[in-house]
Image (cartoon, rainbow, N blue to C red; front, side, top):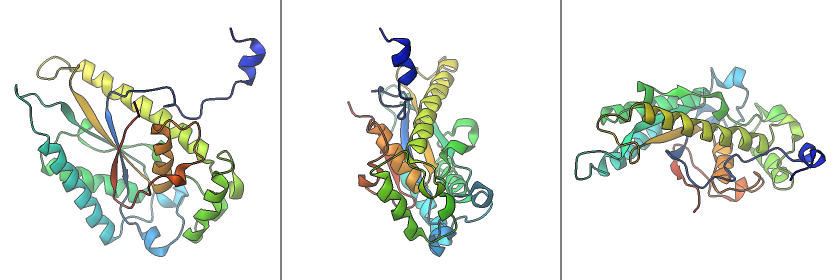
Length: 249
């Protein structure tokens, strides 16, 4: 039994996926396409600026189209098993409200619609918890300064040097979001289980459109790391790259 003193000193959970081995939906990370901030090689993490500026470059728009077409082709290639019932209800797209992510999500969604793939809520859904990690005093400066933050992340994932948002803060908000979305999408399946969909067999594919640091950190959550200190040790997620997020057995 936990004593009151032990309960009061218990550390708050950082990775909300730490004790989970299964999610109902299939989750994917999609990093935004090349942005104007990428082209300028600057850090763009202030919501007051990044929600209205630093959208996609022309290359970034093309990257988002290619990502959408590729995902749509893979989705359709899965086919419909004998009996005519698809194992997937469709695709839910949740996006950071930063301009570069929002534009990526919209272009990606257009490609899915062209392929007649059902979209949850018939549109993308903006989610502030997928915003870029805030880089404090470094915002607007050269992107070479990212490394200064990452070097400290390895030693202390709770640090806020340069007034940045800590890596663990990002891990906490994104993994909590994943659990909430999984529950929302499962409830939607339950509500519509009558008809052609079998709730025990169907699921949503859920695309999380966000930013480099956010998605690197979220991957540590799916790997069930206790904190975000090792996020830069994972394979780098390039612009407009989509990667399935899987909880290990």
